[in-house]
Image 1 (cartoon, rainbow, N blue to C red):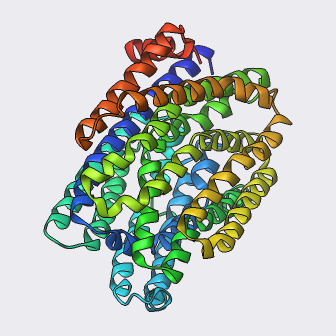
Image 2: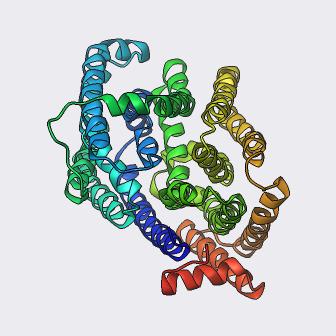
Length: 481
């Protein structure tokens, strides 16, 4: 592929990925505000206790096929057809198993209402299975604009359903139905936009051929799901559904902010890395450029969110205030998460599946072990332990990647730390400027406006290359990647 074509595809992918994730998060904030006003921590806790089952089920049925199909050298309709029918059968089978396991799940948490709730919510597994192959087609062909439209419309329309039910007093059912509507609309739109559609030919040979690659990703994703949801399971079993709600909200709002950047970058990272993997010097340059872009945006966004979230949640619903420290911990942790995700994509592109699996297993086992150890100390120590481990394991991921491409930890620090440092200084100055403001609404607006203005002004005065390129990117829609 020509270099200019790669640049254009990368720029368009970043642009539409940014729009998609940006709009989705704005919608998520607006929808979330209304839901927070009308729901309780316990409502979120009820759905949160089921997250590990839906997450693992989705991982099993997806089985790493999106990444596997992306790395196939040639597009073959029969490959996608095999994956489609495999997902349909597996998704349906998983739902049947979970349907009959619903009473056991309810008994484990001592929440009888979970029987019906889980059986309804788990329908999203079957619905989602119908669109996995279509999503892989859109992903492989870098049809980021189409994926953006799908995600935005699905989020908006599902949010309308959720808000309506929450306002009418349906409690946790509002969240369950919102999830079902989102999954259904996403699948329908993927069928509409995808240039490929399945046939009734049942040939699972391509699935067998992809199984080795996909199994590594499946196992890794399975472990990641257990890792990310183990806290909700432990809190639901040994504490209360309210504690699960606090943890779910703290992680949810922090992930909403991080997803803007992670989603935008990951929507194009793997396809671009695949196209550049023959030139390791070039790939290292691209990776470092993405590091700088991510740090330029994610540091002010995530540290800023941690800075203003107490005022934000106090205005919306004070009953959720205990989730603030959890969000702040996860916001700080999210600064290095994109680095881990990008390193993982490098390992996949170079076929280092065992290294990829090893890193994920080591990371997950450490977090799960710490979760059990810190359970007796409470929810905040559990969250803090995850943050510490995440920062430490960046070094493990870097060590694995540095053996393949010419990049050092000094490069990563030079690319990322300046934006982190500037953000800290800006927030510190903003804190002292707004110290005398007592009205929460005015304080919230003032913090956001002053911090954003100071950050932009600092970038402009320092003649930041990333700032100039970001402006050029927004103006002309192209990048120097």
